[in-house]
Amino acid sequence: MGINVQVNTDADPKKTTVSASGSIQHVITGNEVNSFGLSDSALKDAVAKYFGKRPNDAYLKSPTPWGDLYKTYGWEQVQTVLVARSAQVLSVNSSPSIIKTVILKNNSNKPATFNASVSDNITNSVETNWNVTTSVDFSETVSYEVSFEGLGSVGGSTTWSFGMSFGVGGSKSESISIGSDQGVTVDLDPGESVEVQLTASIGSLRARVFYDVYLTGYSAVNYNPTFKDHHFWALNIGDVMSAGGISNNRQITEDITVGYYSNAQVILSNAKKTVLRALAVPLENSVPVDAG
Image (cartoon, one colour):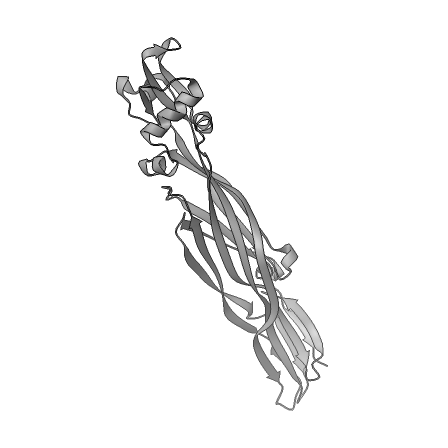
């Protein structure tokens, strides 16, 4: 299924959200056996408390003697499961900023039409840091999808998708061009001028994702002589651990920091600083503006 983290940024902090979903799992490793405190002796003691007698042998996965009990009886080996439980926004800040300013002036003695184009490159970034307090052996890629409101076509959103390895902190950045290379025309009389500003909200988001790690499947045990009329039994590992007082849950957290731009606009003002027009960018169609 995989792990997916979605971040939606906005100039309005109330509209900024983060969510996480999905799970991954694999057959328990030797390292994870130690992490969950399931040494051979501890496992047999827990089985005794759960089932009533200490077994001669107890296993968590293949292979086992006797033709491999898991394969012979179709029992599920013990699996280590990682699941994204929840996510929350820790803090978000956003403030308007002027990215670039262009002054257009008609220095001729005739009225003229000017193309009020303005654009610049901006960089959005994501950094992840993990707090892995229990040793697990997941190496899968976590998929991230970060959307930036007001940077897409005609003020819509644009989405940045990428992957990073589980448990490995790092950073990613993406440089994009925003603004209007063409699309806004302004009519200026001789001596008139207009100021064209490219603005955007600059934001910083801190979020935390909470993961749970637990075990599922069955412990294959052997009794010799038989116990309850059988040599071999498959016992639910969760129930065995509970009876033995062994915790079957570990927590891992991931902190995510996003530096972003949102809600880009082109603002046209006359010499008196009166706003003539504020337009979402990028622009797709020519929009004439009178500077009078």
